[in-house]
Amino acid sequence: MFLAVFVISGIGAALAALLVIAERVITNYGDVDIDVNNGGRKFTIRGGDSLLESLTAQKIFIPSACGGRSTCGYCKVKVLEGGGTVLPTEEPFLDGAERKNGIRLSCQVKVRSDLRIEIPSFLLAVREYTCRCEKIIDQTYDIKQFDFKLLEPDIIKYKPGQYVQLLTPKYEGNSEEVYRAYSISSDPNDNTRFELIVRRVASGICTTYLFDHLKENDKVRINGPYGEFYLRDTGAPIVFIAGGSGIAPIKCILHDMANQQNKRRAVFFFGVRGMKDLFLFDEMPEFEKKLADFKYVPVISQPEPDDNWTGATGRVTDIAAAYLEKQSDAKDHECYLCGSPGMIDSSIEVAAQYGIAQDKIYYDKFS
Amino acid sequence: MNTGNYFLHLLVILFASIFTENMLLARFLGMCSFLAVSRQVKTAVGLGAAVVVVMTFTVMLDWLAYRFVLQPFGIEYFRFILFIIIIAAFVQFLEMAIERYSPPLYQNLGIFLPLITVNCAILGASLFMVIREYDFVESIAFGLGSGLGWMLAIIAMAGIRQRLNNARIPYGLQGPGIALIIAGIMALIFIGFTGVLAGQ
Image (cartoon, rainbow over all chains, first blue to last red; front, side, top):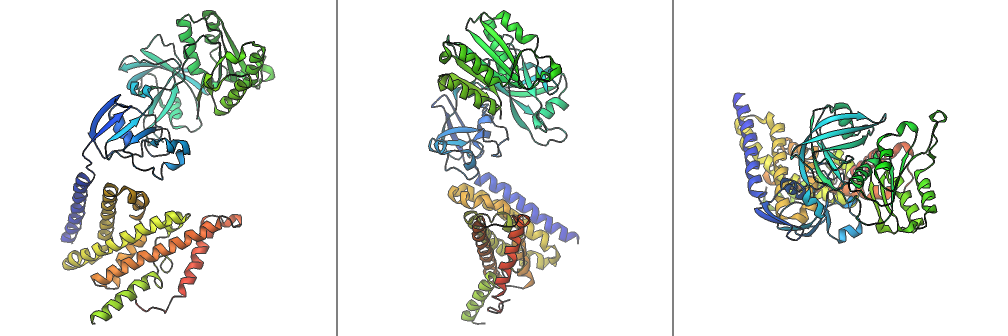
């Protein structure tokens, strides 16, 4: 009996050892050169991992929410050379034009040979940060503000309007580490800290962590900044439209405009459903004083009778349309939109209606 | 038994395991992947081919392990655990090798390999081989035949299910319900082969 157990365990161990050796020998792809953005960054690594893992190891952070399981479709990069064919696991995430242009999901591309890839240049500036939660503020019944102090590195450089990705650690009821994106909403003057405004998502992995588990003085890890949502340096009048927690990047931009003494004409339509969803009662009107030509217009779509709401009522896009109607230079406006996909799509329609060119409409869609 | 007769005998084993003793439709082994991955003919072909390869080779390996390890030590009762370990290791190895040396093949076949590690048809083939006391060459014929039979069944199933997309199926029977009924009918059809070959 003892011999039997010994023999079977021996065979098991031998097979395991064989597999380990095989993995060393077979999956050894040797040294591989990766060229990012035509010489923008070059490095040599050992092949065998996925492109996403290899880039992360080099501190190049590609946005990814699912952690490399090919379910979120965010980690797209352009592979110019050496990526092999598109895998069945990627197909659902790539449309015809993307396939033609060599766009791939970096989590599915295996680094086997020399690679030449292209990524948006701002991604090369992305760093990983450790920070400490300084303060958690209830803004509404389902929106909280989180203030973070940077620890390592101790400052963050970003364009007002950009977002960071927060690493959700494992906690009770969640067995996977995922990243979720949140826009920075604080005054960019103080680059040693930043704040995020987060709306609770029912059974959302990260918001559940932030709302139920994160405590003041806890440490979290983020990476960033990401995104092309920032104020363009022109003289054009501005229309900001946001819904709910979409106010975050716009608040950051407004802080920056106030710091720069920006004199551009600007108006901000902030749409919420009811009085109970409205927040930042003091801060937002404050910008009207700080900025030369700025108007803040909160819009409630479904006010209750006892809200005693006297401000704008209706859909935020309709109120914005009414404003543009009155402007003689409506078509010269730049539009900055942040909120739900539905709100953004109808805002784009409104902007187009008043002759605002597509390339002057900038948005940050929540998904 | 002379060589010609032996060869004929092998052919009988091969065809018997494809048709009359079809692993899926006569023994109902490997049902889970059969039902899960039979929505499209293309993927069914990939999975079927992977099963053929894995079954043929694992039957060979398991035969060697049985003959030269388990029997000499008199520990045949350990065959379940040993066979499963060998199958898992082999599949792992095969996946690594295919991914390394043939990316196109990996794309078509390799992604199904992890599914096969726990496919009971694979283990079933090795266990039947022991029960029926096949010699090494007979085992190869049996493994290959069983794999081909499984592939045949899943491709047929996928073909039927693709047609079913256009059929009006009662609500309560949609999905696995109708698939099981079809599997049952296919099994009845395969009973028609009974007695054609008396190889077992």
